[in-house]
Amino acid sequence: MRNVRTFLPLFVISIICLAISPSPRADDWPGPVVREVFCKNREYFVRVTPGESVGETVGFGSAKIGKHARAAFFRMQVDRGYRLEREIDLSNPVAPVDFFVSNAGDLVTLDNWHNVGYGIVLALYHGDGRMVKAYRLGELFPKSEVDTFTHSVSSIWWHKGPTYIDEDQKIFYMGWRESPDYRELLLNLGDGTVRLCASGPKYKCHGPYLQ
Image (cartoon, rainbow, N blue to C red; front, side, top):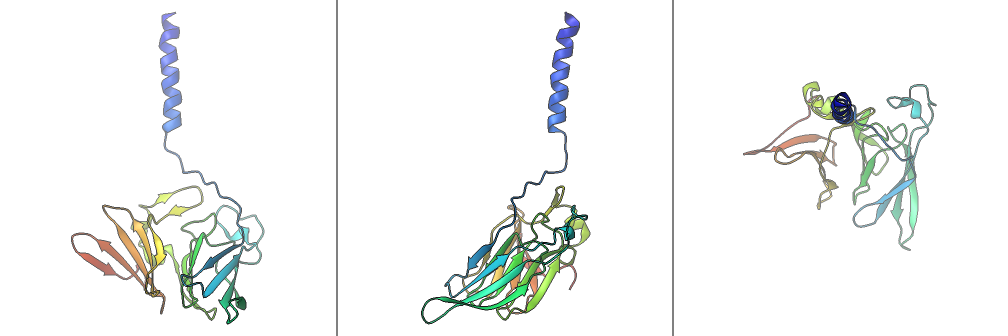
């Protein structure tokens, strides 16, 4: 009987250890859907239709390679209705995780569906449909920095914080480190340049890792 009593606690402890042992963070993604985002003054909106190139995403190499996501740019008319101005292919094989539209009709895309941190993680398109700038994670940060981000089965969770276009509609802000070591990325909507800023004892900024 003593052996049984000794065995049961050890068995329970073993189960608990297995349950809390470190493992890659699991990913659970809903299927991509058509989405629309309006700018602040509602003069423009962009509709993003998911692509079909799942085979270009990390972990799905044997899947179909096809069309990329598409963005349709709409502008308000005199009658208060919206007219389609242009459609473009995006760099995203399936869809951006999030996107933002400025009052000038600029489009900022952030990350990739099911692949946060992989491929083009940040891109700027002007209202005429032209891609101004696109960044991969390794162009923004050195490998030593990327290695500090949380990695999951299919993503690199590289930013934690608010994401928005500023009141003047000239800068896209993104927090990529949490307090007390809060840091932010500033994307200039005019030319696509990026500044990485830290709010330590003295607020300071520098360019991306590769310029």
